[in-house]
Amino acid sequence: MSWHARRLAAFDIETTGVDCEHDRIVTAAVSVVGDAQPAESRAWLADPGIEIPAGATAVHGITTEHARRLGGDPAAIVEDITGLLAEQLLHGVPVIAFNARFDLTILDREARRHGVRPLIDRVGGSARLLVVDPFVLDKRFDRYRRGKRTLGAVCAHYRVPLDDAHAAGADALAAARVAWRLGQAFAELRETELAVLHGQQIVWAAEQAVSLREYFAAQGRDEHIEPAWPVIPAGAALAA
Image (spheres, rainbow, N blue to C red):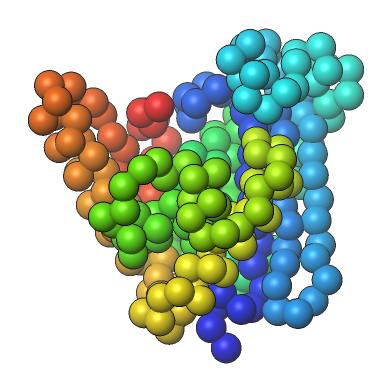
């Protein structure tokens, strides 16, 4: 059975901003779905310990006051998320994350910030990660399609409903459904073993970063586009 028809661990976060080194998790969700089994879903609201800027609130709807009043301890939440994802990975279930470079790097930095054992360490190193990123795959398998590559745009293209965009649970499930659609659409993709596919995405993500940097350069813009995937090495900055 192809990977896309088996169990998938969909993961998404909403944050205080787009800086992987300094911004914090506000909401998160993990939904383990597929393989004709009931979905197992968890969601978290954290008190990030810093102010949530108005721009971030405009995206996900969570204010600083709301997070402080109802949010949980961020260290405990990061432990929960990291432990759950590690458990799935160690059982061969891939993590599905749209633009995984952002979500998994934020999770990594939050773990280090709070003294939680990072996901990479729990699974035995980066070579043991199994990540499927519909953002990278869509750009690879439909590279010449014009228009945006946001989750909403990609969902619309692949006829995946997304009724509550920027809610972590809705975005996580949408990413899993897009991954399933991609597997259905492209034989090469569904016939590739997960470990091989993970390695291919490392290469494709780097190539896509070079292509985007060249595009910006042609417009006279000197932009840093991070090539590392799915976790940026500690200390590197992610271009917004």
